[in-house]
Length: 178
Length: 178
DNA sequence: GTCTATAGGACGATAGAC
DNA sequence: GTCTATCGTCCTATAGAC
Image (cartoon, rainbow over the protein chains, first blue to last red):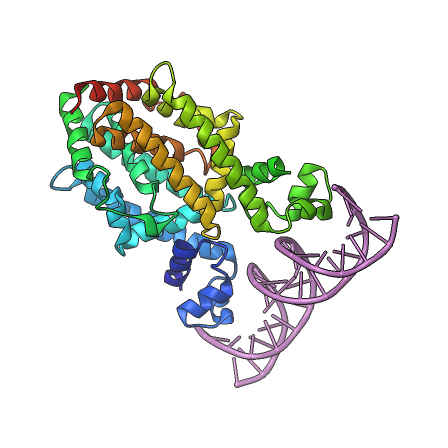
């Protein structure tokens, strides 16, 4: 049922993810859904808790990544990864959509905490706060543009610079320790 | 009336920006509002057209900025500018909120076009597509995190690196022409 | 041009059978 | 635990007086 809610919020926005639609997508009836999630807030909380668990797993993977945390971080933030059906990416997109409505403070807090944790890991690797912030900004930029709004315009092979070059540039900065 | 709609969408999200609320905010009655904007789509279109006009003005200012397009671009993308009551920033935030619902294709297209135009101006200045993309990603990252979701957590004087240093770093890259 | 009144519909949530 | 049926509320949009 959470999967159905997540899917609808991700693809069509929060407005369309009504109890009726979620129940239909999950293959149950509205009453059945409301037994497990008595309110809309319960549904949101369920997704936020799922996100928090996935953040823990991602931070662990990031700190122990073979090519370093920065490489892992930037690569998993690119729209290429979003296009795939990665559960973590889908969950982030869903919670982001929920947060942007302004009605779910818990969603906002979870996303803020996620960014703080990423920043700490990156800072630990690159050492310099300026470079660490730059890396986080690039990752956020990659995440938000242009994917979530218009999945049709995601064009990995476009004339824009390949993301591998951007990573190399950032790692160069990290080594020079500006 | 458009101001009222923009303000409500920006501060409280699209859900709360009903005809009733917009009319009350604008100081007219619901019927009066509906005379000028016969449907919700008309309201959205009005805001998108306002955005397109503001984009034209911003691109012009950006190309002729004293300290260069990159400096202008990054500075006006930072949350410090968002906190102010800049009409352009407010309009972008409002249209972004509308776009994230997935119900207004015109809003999505306007934002994509905006990013393409910014990229073209930056590329024209820095020459290198990789650096140009990096600059745009940083600007997008600055824009989206963490401001729009949680205006209370905007903390310009936080321990994170000052944005001026980030700009310097990007300009260094631009000069070295990686 | 601006108002009141209301139609028509969708949504969140409850009640109670099975 | 899952279902059907339904209540109350809120929203978009229309009709028509002024």
